[in-house]
Amino acid sequence: MSAMFSSLRVFNYRLWFGGALVSNTGTWMQATAQDWLVLTHLTNHNATALGVTMALQFLPPILMIPITGLIAERYDRRRMLMVTQASMGALGLALGLLVVTDVVQLWMVWAFALVMGIVQAVDAPIRQSFVSELVPPKKLTNAVSLNSASFNGARLIGPAVAGVLIAAVGTGPVFLINAASFLAVLASLRFIRVCELEFKPRVVRAKGQIREGFGYVRSRPDLIVVFIMIFIIGTFGMNFPIFTSTMATGAFHVGSDGFGLLTSAVAVGSLTGALLSARRERPRMRILVMASISFGVTCTVAALMPTYWSFAAVLVTVGLSSITLMTTANGTVQLGAAPEMRGRVMALYMAIFTGGTPIGAPIVGWVANTFGPREAIGVGAAAGFVAAGVALTWLVRSQHLRVRHNVGHGLSFRVRHDGDGMPATEAILVQREEAAAARLQTEESLARQ
Image (cartoon, rainbow, N blue to C red; front, side):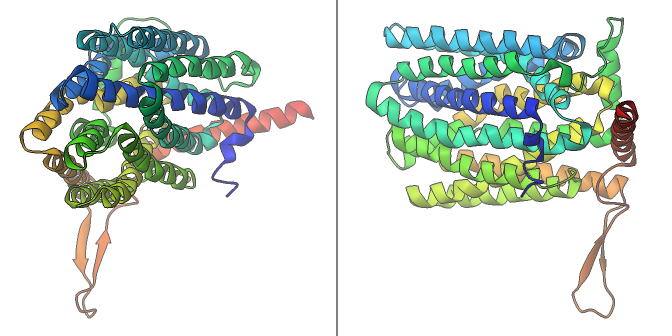
């Protein structure tokens, strides 16, 4: 149990974790209110309009790839986070005032979604890279998993609270509460002990740095296969707002509180998966494969559930498999990338993960409108199986994965490959980070003596 929460022993990470938990809760409340606002107040249950809203919010990460990674590597990440987090709080406040005064229109929500997406495109790689400054290298995997736990703990609380508040007082106050929640993360950034941060080398401005980042990823097939998997799942599988809202209104005919509880059901599984991931010392490719297959299976079962409560129960397993996939992929990329390239690599990772939404969300929304919400979830299930197929194909070709029949043991088979799914290049990079951390500890011990 202590290993699961080891990063919380670090003061800076503990402070960041608490502030992020409050802010994430507000963010999930706003996401629920925004989806409900578009689906029931600004349109007549139009899932395509909801898909467009999601697409606008997630389009900027793709368009801004050339600059967001370099921003994360060139500038002070703590100060940049204070700027981006304050900006998102201000946007939530402005949208809340428009809703409360009853002047909001669909195009306004779309405009705010686009601007929010621009700010989040800058914020995401900085926030992801900043974790490596809060904890020593040996605790990075644990810190990434606990970040997911914080995010999904908020996902458990936020939508359920938002659903009750929407039913009681409307969507406007929910946006205002989210704006206030950003004060918590801003306070944590203000009081972090700067002298205890694990500063990474800043990248000096030079020609060809963007091209260098793309070239680095292109030379790493182990990273490329993770990016392909994340693109497939992120584009067609991670459209939970569409899945849950259309099932809530179209299949089960429940209100905002029922919609919020479905989102929280996903979060229960996600929180469990994040905490289980925190126990693992290092991400493995085989976990990615298993999680992708599990995502496909659980989405298939969810699409077949006949009642609201059976659907909600299966959503827990959907959340478990999806967050296991996400945390493992995130940890693989963070540990696999060289420290001087981490900002650019994470910017590309986040762009691929969220950038597929502008393609997938309108398509999945159209499927929900045309064929039904269950068929839309089936699209997500197919994405899980295809992503697993991509990983298995890479393992067969690069690590000589083989399924062999054991002679004399009936129908017994064994799976053999060159290792555990971690490429040699990645293992070397991890060893270098661990060796650097060990040297630093030795130097500090000698200095004290």
